[in-house]
Amino acid sequence: MGHGSLQKSGKVRKQTPKVTAKERHSAIPRRSLRNKYVRRIQLGKYAGQPSSMGSKRVRSR
Image (cartoon, rainbow, N blue to C red; front, side, top):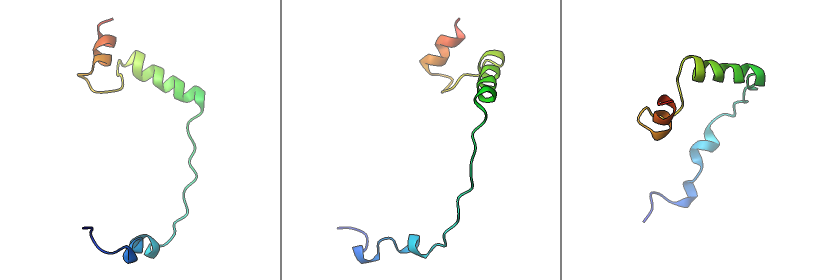
C-alpha cells in the first residue's frame, strides 16, 4: 500500500533544528512601480513566455 508506517511520519521535520525566519521587506510601492515601468515600457520586457498570446499582443502594438 503505502511507503512506511504512519508511526514514522514527521520524523525528519521533528529532528531539524528550528531556525528563526529573517524579516523581509518589499520595496516601497513607488519604487516597485517605477521598476515595473522601466522593465515593461522602456526595456520592452513583459512577463510570461515569449510565445504566449499576451506577449505577442503587446509586441504588435
